[in-house]
Length: 490
Image (cartoon, rainbow, N blue to C red; front, side, top):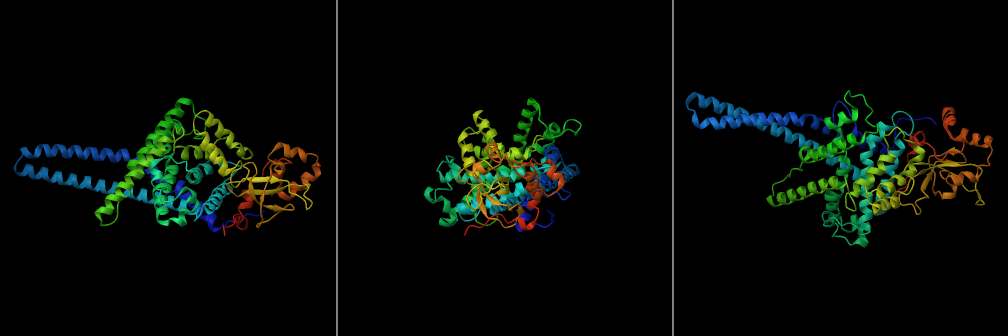
């Protein structure tokens, strides 16, 4: 398959969002760049303010006891210090507002790109978003960790939104902050919230959904504080930051991450300033902003040890995305469907809620969005074919979590850009060993013949199993015509 450099509009949007969230560049215009700039400068700026404040206090203490030219000189110094302090304060306020505005716009775009006007459209668009992230991410080679780290926060945010919907539909949200924004719609009509009560839904989006996305994006931002980076990179700055840390260093890192994430939330971002002339509107807005900040802070705090609480909205997607978009050296694409083994183990240890794990399993199924499925199709008479084909997982909420809903990528061993959807039943999915046994009698010559047609080059064929449990989709998806895998809800 030949690669092309252009992408569909949606793929371009996803790549842009990832870059504005987690890229490093000279213009320092990502959420990551802005947080690092804050972490490296706030101590210096605080020291400057403290020094000037101390000088001002000493001058003001002396002023009542001096006269003449000495008093004039001190007053001049007093005014100069006040001007400097005002300048620092205004500069810090401007930077804080710029950071907040940038993050807020990014959160808005993530919600817009992952949601529509109905529950069904939310799921379709989120499947497309999650699938696109997986499909543009390398699954082989040296850049897996770097790419996955850039994508994890956004991936986690989308999962948190879909978990929120599922909890609201089941009337299982016990958090009073969230419940005040869902009172306008009966539980039975929650799936039509956006169309049944549009004004109330906009408030729900503004004061609940966007803060949840914000929490997901910020959850690990404290790891980029210099103290955390020293642990991750080692004293000489040359260690692999994705290595497994000793227990004590891991504990220390978790403490730094939480402390600095909260500091960034409160001091680096703070409250969105009110724009307008109405005192009543201003008071109402400031109260809502303060409540939002408390909500985000509570989400971050409770995600550390969520038990059965609302912190699971972050914790469970965090664990899920850390496996699907792993940055560890032992990453193996073909083992991604084992993600729920890890999640269930975490629930057994009390790290998260089993109910929340089960809820996410119902949403995603066993196979992550964008995963490459190899399956045995049926002949016209319903009998299994003497070959296998490729498909890509493209739907949330499969009827059976072990039977993914996919878009076919090959037909009669030829790649196609406009396939139809198919539910891959368990006994036709080559991921499962019992399915492999069914066609283990196929000749080696026939299997090599299939590989020659489906693999893109000789080197790839050499590394693939004759009966592959999955297939790597990135080359297929790199072609613009193959990026239209999701049908709009009509």
